[in-house]
Amino acid sequence: MENESKVDEGEESTEGASELDMEKRRMESECGPSTSRSKRYRSKLSEFISSNRGQQQPAEDVILVDVYEKAEDAQYLIRKPTGIVFDDLTSLHRCEWDPNYIEHPGRFQAIMDRLKVADVLDRCKRLSYTFPSNEDLLEVHTQEMIDKLRAISLSKEEEWEDQAACYDSVYFNESTFTSSMIAAGCAISLVDAVCNGEVQNGMAIVRPPGHHAMSDNFCGFCNFNNVAIAAKYALGKKLANKILIVDIDVHHGQATQQTFYNSNNVLYFSIHRYEHGAFWPNLRESNFDYIGEGAGKGYNINFPLNAHGLDDSSYMAIVLQILLPVAYEFNPDLIIVSAGYDACLGCPEVITFL
Image (tube, rainbow, N blue to C red):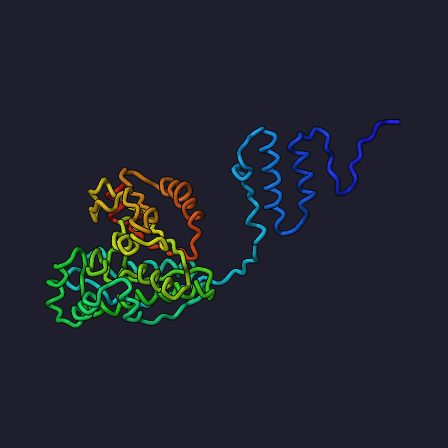
């Protein structure tokens, strides 16, 4: 009669199994199916490895990684809609004395046109917004700066250009203050909707932009720092404890960096053109070695781009090898993307970069 090798249902063959494999199976059987099984299993396996190596080190010093550990606490994800918030009134903010100014209403319209062609608008949930409160603005900006922007918008048209000349790359008209309030309000509205579970994610299509707007100074087309205001709102309302801000604008968002430079609740990650400081805003603080101070040390990450001819693969390498590992470790409650599109092919500044 031929020899037969049988394995009963629920059992596994030990033929050819190593001592470690057999020990793993024994411990799996002992640990049982409870929710704490994975931790007990790793503890027993750690002790077994340590003893068989003849090591004197404590079992907990043996590093084991269970890639399925987080699955023990997995929850079903109910997909919610994507939110979108905007207001056509922001197109009224324009440079009255230079129709060819690089920051103009056409930027907003180009995005809207593309969303319509791609049939995105009808598939998103349109969100409403309100103006930010003065207290919301004061979380980032001084009262003097807020009052100044309001006063400039109410001033005479012939004064706007002279007022703008006092700052770096800004312009004003009668709609500037209202448009700036709309932009900040839309950012707050989107953050509120995401954090409260109304939407899964979303996009605030706003102008003027914000990441160059400092606490007491207008700069780089920016009046109010929309992203910083929204992040401060989320922290203040206890909607999030940890926030990751990813800035993909071709310019460094020095004002957003300054706002959270001493904070460990907000991690600021910026990918920007630098050219060893030759590219605007031409600041030493835009370099890689500015990593935060005090409690915020290590929570400010700059990735300055110095080489020409960079393409999608360069950005993907940064995202996959640097940004994603950082994001997983930080484990934020909320991610805000400061989405400037001047790093995209077709922008005049990118043409000179390539």
